[in-house]
Structure formats: C-alpha cells, structure tokens
Image (cartoon, rainbow, N blue to C red; front, top):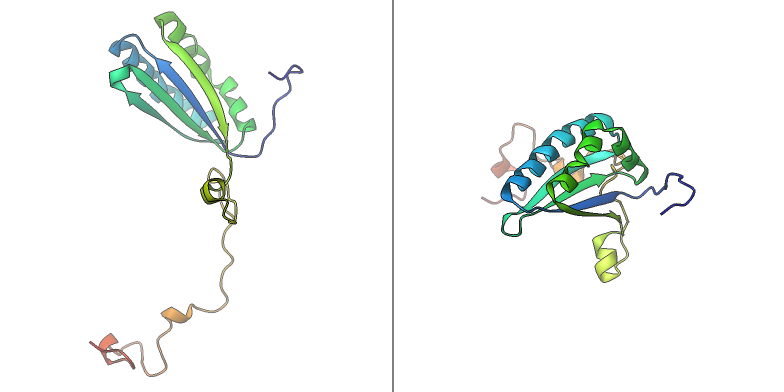
Length: 160
C-alpha cells in the first residue's frame, strides 16, 4: 500500500477484476442488480471508464466483475460514485466473500507470447487517426481503358 497516500500514476490501461463468492442464488441476483445500477453511474462520473461486464458462474455461485479503465489514475473516480460506495458494504452484510485485483496492460499479445517485434498499442487507449493519403488508392482507380459507365466485364484484362 502506498504509505504516503498519494495517487498512483500509470498511463497503461488497467482491468479490475472483483470476485464475489455468494452463498445463495438470491445473493447472486442482488450482486448482478447492483452491478447494473453502479455501471450506469460510473459511466456518468468516471472519465476513464471504458466498460464493465459480469461473468456469472451459477454452478459455483460466483460472479466475476470485470471493469476496463484507460489509466490507473482514472480508477480513483470510483471514490466519487455514491452507488459504488454504498454497494461496497452490502457483500459483507450478506456473507458474500470478495477479493479484487488490478491487472495493467502488459504489452501486445504477439510480443508477450512470442517475443515478436510489433507496434505496441494499448487496446484500452484510442489510436491516433491514420494519416490521410494524398492520392486515391491504386486498387480503386479504374484503368485507362474504362470509363465510369463501362461495365466491369468490358474493362481491359477482365475475363468473365
């Protein structure tokens, strides 16, 4: 834990994974309803929030809540989400065991798994727009012997 209570800074995208081990199916329904309600408010309040989804393991009475964040710092906005603050007290009262962890972006999958040299772009960050080409693509330009009204089958080199 950060002993000086300063916010951690990390520009990489992060995934938060929270495990809810429920005692009953009714507990699971309560957690799922809370998840839906909280997600709406988080989307309004937290700028770096990308999305969230529950993974429901009915047989094991377990729910995995997965949330995606653009940066670690953006996760601090959860402290401003009133529904999350209130809901975070419910699992203990219902006897639901919880654990949670944060997973930072570790690199492009080809680089991580196969040590391939690739451009490393964090999928939780938006890409920069591609530069516009000055000339039209050569594959989309008709050849000199065709006109816009010439049927494709009549163009030079085309065989039906």
